[in-house]
Image 1 (cartoon, each protein chain N blue to C red):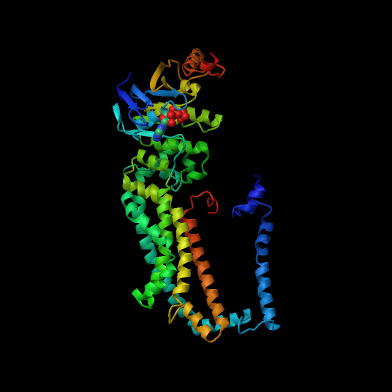
Image 2 (cartoon, chains in turn brown, green):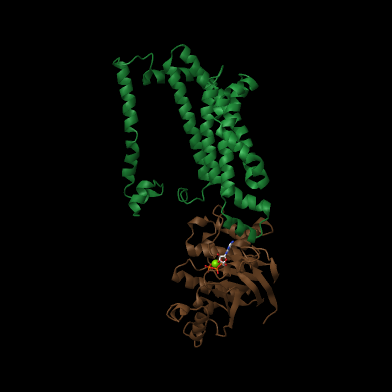
Length: 246
Length: 277
Ligand SMILES: Nc1ncnc2c1ncn2[C@@H]1O[C@H](COP(=O)(O)OP(=O)(O)OP(=O)(O)O)[C@@H](O)[C@H]1O
Ligand SMILES: [Mg+2]
């Protein structure tokens, strides 16, 4: 593995006082520079909680976290400031001379194929366009760690496929470490080097994905990995709840 | 919802491609039929002697009186005096309302110090303060301006405070993640988010400003539209009284339009206004 860029040790997070069961329970995690990691887990398992801690939105109160200075987040909703044109949203908080910052923002928008909407108001963007703007806003910061919290969950299936390949391309081009939170096992297998499963506050699976890129669903081995992950998530192949069926 | 019913409930200006534009325009014209009819009836009734024109001047007399007042320069003089009162009063209200709103909205300490007091003061009908204001400030300009300022401060304060406090926390988070410090967050996130509400407050403030002006100008004024009206009453000149009322109405409308123009420019990003250009 490349030099680690993120290291968590015994990270614990509680919401309801010191005696309540923790949402994250003495969690250990190391991510290497440029590594693409997907994080799966049932709803409410604490994926967003972990990502928020990594983003610096929540303080680390128990345990240790070693984080790179340059981090960027794409949220599940675009979270663009509606009163700023798209390119100003991308440029938000960037240091430097106004014109240089504008050029950087426009370049980032070109990369996500949104240059033609640079001057548009965010509320006039389609869902996919808004998420691409969010992606540009994260990329323009040249992060060492890119945090993606289900960024495609609200998109239709076709747009989601295009966004997935866009993310794969951008990752190949810039090589940030990525932590992608997703519900979608196939999405995780199409994009990630490693797939983690979060359950009961701990990482119960850490699965290396050794499939050649670009990934295909039809590739040998893909299905076997998929079934293993679904089993860990407690769902059998037909989507039934394995625990209840047993 | 079908496109057509949407078009009927939202008269978007983007509609030119729609076939029902003509119908829309007719709709709008139809709204003036009843007022115009009423004015015609009013005129006809006066000419037929149905009511005393000393108690209610007919539209023709009102127009004539207005014309006279314009030619003599009297109307302009009184109008300027009234406008000056509103302008100074509103400027004070804006200064006070915005500062109080910012202090209370942006800090818990400010809220604790100010909000309860201001909410209590707001419960007091400010026009009931007239006797006190006269005692404190006399019967000159100060009282009239103070009345305008008092009435207009509260809506500005309340809406700005409310607007600041209802900022979407998700946007604040996004701002923080992308490296905005507190000052930048206020400038780029909090204040723009509060602006729509604050502008509604400004519109309310203008409304109460005119109301306060009407009341204030009945206190021993020697100039102003209110004086014009009070003076005309002495001489039973209902035509001039009605000219005064007309001017008040037009000023109110004009102020409202002004805020609309400000809104259209400042809130161009809002979905309801997007596309109206
Ligand atoms: N601010 C908070 N206060 C109290 N409880 C919280 C808070 N944030 C999250 N939780 C709780 O922590 C648990 C984990 O929440 P989290 O949002 O991390 O789940 P998730 O894995 O992202 O779920 P989903 O897949 O549905 O987004 C949930 O039980 C949630 O109710
Ligand atoms: Mg979540």
